[in-house]
Length: 303
Image 1 (cartoon, one colour):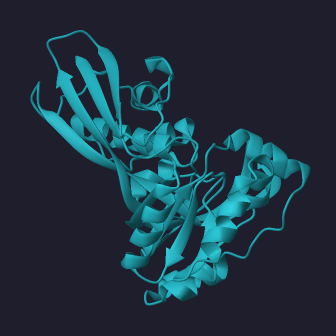
Image 2 (cartoon, rainbow, N blue to C red):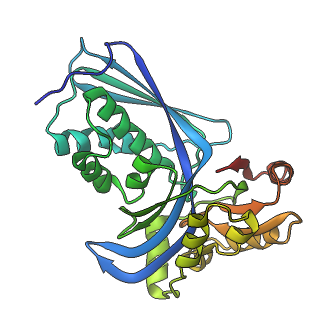
């Protein structure tokens, strides 16, 4: 089965693919369908990759992926067939029964680093699903698209919704949409990444208590919580496992936490990026500049 494209051959569709932070991440030892049961509060931030999609209907079905990395991003050297955006095309074809008509070229301008806990691959996959949904005239939140998203990875579903949300299951189940808080943030990534698989294996060897997510959810639902109040409810029980794999995370978290103007610093996801909620944009800029001068990947951003 095929579907007509929503724009003419040769046109470009450009989509932003934002990074995410886990304001709260609570992993349980319970495994269902191969995934740890968890609760997490995700929010998107204004750090984003940019994806440009071009279709040429005169050519046979094919997909090419071109990646351009920002100067501070280490390239990921993998075959095109292993790239998650390439897999996203096949996943959506399979779940919808549609077949791509023509040649699809996907250019990714990367600003989100790899193995950083920011879901750079998942957000790119979600953008690809959204692009194909638009090209094929289907609802990006329809069941076939959600099926494809869940197949690609737990975080992909969140990016189809965007904003701020409480997610459950293995991370792929939308439990509640939440008002997005206004936060001034600084992100700092130490030298080295953390494999999510290794972080979960380390957690299994020494499970940590599940944090209570309800106080944070109530604060966000209120719609007028201060950044300082939100910072007080940040939690991540996967952080000890990630820190055991990369001790620099602890050093960085402690440094940021002791910096004037920082309300709290926390690892996002399995890391290795540490984010800090700050009292002002000026503070985030100053901290990012200081860490960049020391050779870290560091960014000032907002939700």
